[in-house]
Length: 163
Image 1: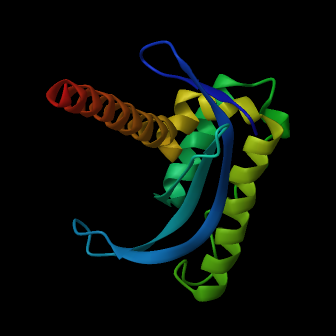
Image 2 (image 1 turned 30 degrees about the horizontal axis):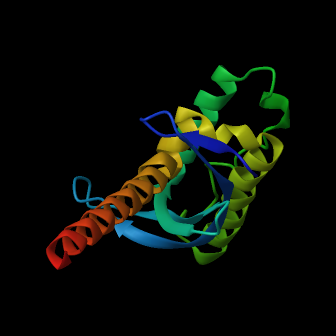
């Protein structure tokens, strides 16, 4: 996928985006005292100049359900190409290893299939918020700009001192 993201100052950052399911972890809901499963997604953005930014996002099944509903409502004409989410219900424990492994595979397939079918969705605020794309990409771009400007400033300062 080779989308472009717009920065606040109107410049555009070109690159390619990839997401894959890394795994899952069990967490405790402090309010209810119940355990639940979180799924770990690894996101990678590669800019045209080869600079790579990788980050992990942790999401619950219900968050996948939320983006599925939002995307189908926002893009009804594209919804037929979106895969279906794995079932919420399971006979037995939803924390069993077999269930978690299958759901993990299915959720990984779900998110990669949506982005493969509609690559420009990485620019949509629903996917952006879910995968924290702009936050990571633009933060790194700002950090590079600050370093570049501070290096230029230091070079100028050193040059003046040596004259």
